[in-house]
Image (tube, rainbow, N blue to C red; front, top):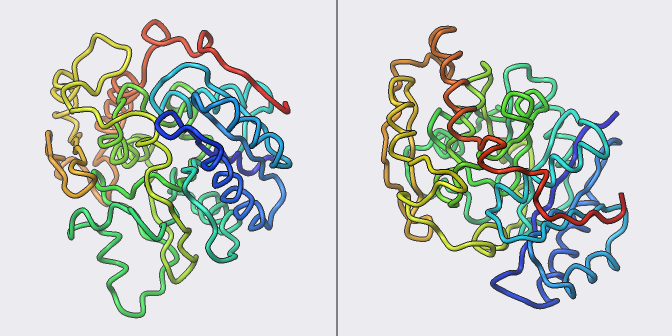
Length: 328
């Protein structure tokens, strides 16, 4: 059974040199050692790293396939490109794991098995996080439901749902095949090119198929180690919200106006993730227990997200993106 396709995202545009490649190799090896179930495959999705870095990874990693994106594009594009190319070659999986290249296993735990069991066996989830020891996003605001749960004494839950419009930073996040199929075969909203606004979109995406996004808690799984700024910040600089649209003539302000009647909200994390600017408030009255209050809201929320967060083929054609595949 094809349980998890792991996509480990690397880029050294800002930091050329084999030292990062060695770190990536060490990080990924530490995670491979934690695999305790069958059906877990590893892909490295790399955007524009040096030939030296790419060759170092190929020489020093086993049981890993490589997808090299040979054009400077946002992380969302390079990840989705690796996802699409992998499925073309390998077929669909039950789930897909996004991994930041700064993530590593500080301690051994059954990370993959625990994530998979909760996501697949819990019928109402479409996406699931494991927390890291740095840069979780929880420190950005004291109102987050995940942070409040972690502060409780003697809680017994293995995971907690994330309130719509809130987020955990995308360092280790597992998605279902159902969610991928719902959004043009992709998982990361590729209309949005900057790092700050994407992460709260996942709660809306899950809600639009009557599912939730959740986070595993510390009493169930150990936190992963995380070296900061080795995925999105290594690839492109933060983009002001007015310029966040990629490869499209559409404006973010027009998109936000379309989503307002559906309770859609948009937050931009700024100042090195120190604070949040809200550009459109989430309307909680249209949701009950983090799901749309009725089928009409759900249908039009999904239609809005699919049409406005994901690029059309006319706006960006993944088939034409310069890509090299290794070990397939």
